[in-house]
Image 1 (cartoon, helix red, strand yellow):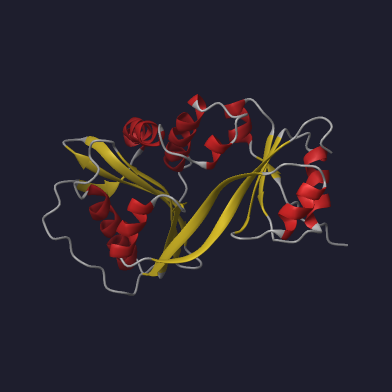
Image 2: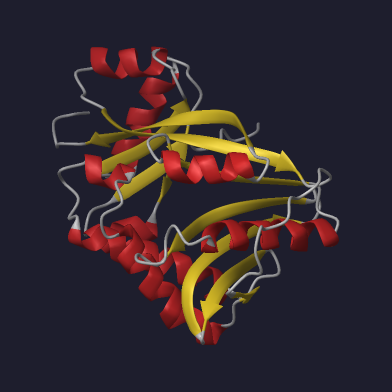
Length: 255
C-alpha cells in the first residue's frame, strides 16, 4: 500500500529563527483535508502551521473555522511568467552596473541588501502577532545567501554591482530537465531603487537564460507589491496564478 504523502513538513529554518515549532505546506481547496491537517499538526507538536491554497479558496478555510480555529489570512502571493522564446527589449541607456553571477565572496553584500530591503517589507510573517518582527529581515538575509552556500547546479544568484558593491541581487532555481527558471528572491538596496538597476538586472537574467536555451521563467510577490509587478509587465511577464497564505496558531486545546 502506498503511504499517503504528508500535507505539512517541519520548517527547520522558520522554527529555529522564531523559536517556535513551525510546519508548512501547499494544500488543495478540499474540506476533507482539514482533519488530516489538524492531525499532522498534532503529530508534529507544531505551534504554527503555515499553508497556501489557490487564491479565493474557501471550503478548507470554512471547515477549519467550523472546527473552532481562527486561520489568519497572511498574504496573497501572485505568480507572473513569460516564455524565453519571446523577444527581450533593450534598455534605453548603457547600464551603469556590472551584472554577474555571484560567488561566495558576495555573500556579505547580498545579505546586507536583503536585510535593508526587507526590513520594512510586509511579508506573510508580519501578519502573525506570534512572530518576532525583528527576526524577519534576518530570515530573508539567511535565505538569500543560502543559494550560494548550497553550491548546487540548480541554484544561481545574480548581482548588480557598482564599484564593487552589491546593490541588487536575484536568486534563481533552475530545472534543467524542464528548461524552467524561477526567480525566487530579489531585492534592490534602498536608495538605489528608481534608477533602473532592477530592470537592467532582470533583462540581463532573461538574456542569460535565453542564451542557455531555457524556455520559461516565473517570479512571484505579494499582491500589494504593485511597483515590481509593473516592472515585470514591462519585461514581458504576465500574471498566471495566485495563492492565499494562511497562518494557523495552535494552542494546547486547539486540536
